[in-house]
Length: 124
Image (cartoon, rainbow, N blue to C red; front, top):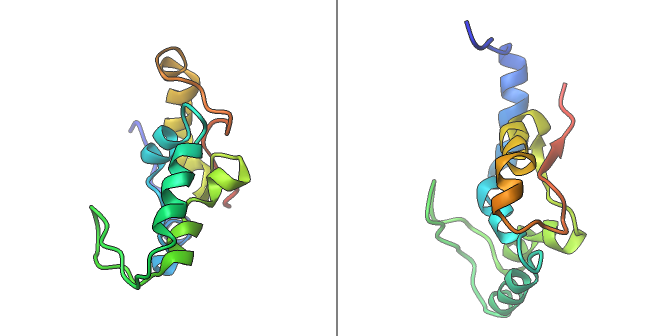
């Protein structure tokens, strides 16, 4: 077989890292796009404008909606730009394929990011 199933424990850990009890996230492919060019500064300007509004729900384009969050939680979703690193909270293994694309074919066709390539957290 070209793949091997992980144990339930590893799958649950990976899903737990990704879902983080419903904490919002920027999809990895979108994060790669947003960190290009001026490395997300234009995105942060937009986020900062939105964070000045008064709201308690966000309706995302995908998955469950609405999300119960206000300006601070919405803004925190983009902290990877503020930190200056293309890091995600989920397992590094889960972003390995996208990182390989960034370091391979996309390296020549996409403006590089000063935030570096996508990196996840170490998982057992």
